[in-house]
Image 1: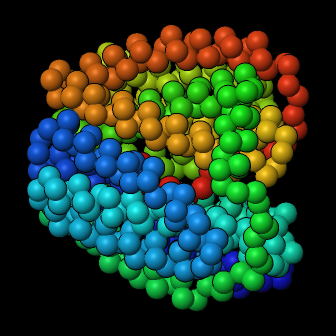
Image 2: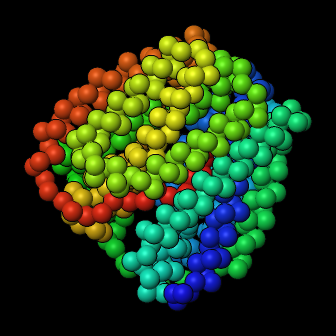
Length: 410
């Protein structure tokens, strides 16, 4: 038994309860049921990412000033309010506003969640255990999500009410937010770093001044956008194109979550086996294959490609962030570089998602996904070519990152 085991167990319990996401396969179907218009669906979802762009940095500053536990509580309560309001919505502006509240909650949670755990481990002099404990948290999260997806599918199948998954999840989430009361605020204070503008300036110089890092960031952004757009279309595709029942959708999403969790825990071994060049090529090829299968096969058999897509989702962040971290030589700038990569993803996703929604509304989901694959194929191939030229130039040995809690929405 290590020092502070009780504190860590309470954190596990907090993460387990707040990860019971009944709505995971159904939140988008709830929007689609109200409008039957993919363009409107993507506009509403884009509001989430626009909110993230505006508030992620300010909420981080609040977390540094007022403590991790404070922002966790504010975040969970706001998050729950957003989910509840989303479930109560039936008009465009209601969905838009509630999605922004939902996103604001995520901003606060992200600012407090992982820093809370890491600072706690520093206080307990167990910070070397962070990766293992974080991995256990992620495994617990995926297990809870898997169970929640099945339960959510049973609820919707029995009642034919998609909104109940959101409303019930909000109640469970409110209970989860109360468990924060039993967490202990870590006493460790964070070290002072240079001013925000100076920090950002150096981070930009690192990203855009290094060929290897820029290629990695852009490659991750391209694949991550493809993964997310597929995720936005997935429930409508499964419901409308494949005519699956709500229970079937819940069961499949549960199995997706299991696959994602397993792949995530094996990411290090897979990357070691494949090596840097082949790892990125595998991510690229798997993404394209998934898109092509969805276009060519109108059958539940096509769902097999979704397991491949979830494998990409599980591998992408640990592998690409690991390669980026190895090439950022200054530890105090790693978070800034990752933040710039996240900002680029969010910005470009907002630019891509709405046109994709318009295309899906005017033509079909399958044709839109094929078009997206056609667009990303040459971009990804070019970035892989650049990477092949850069990979042997800049050595590095720093470890990668563990993917953190999934709060929205796949």
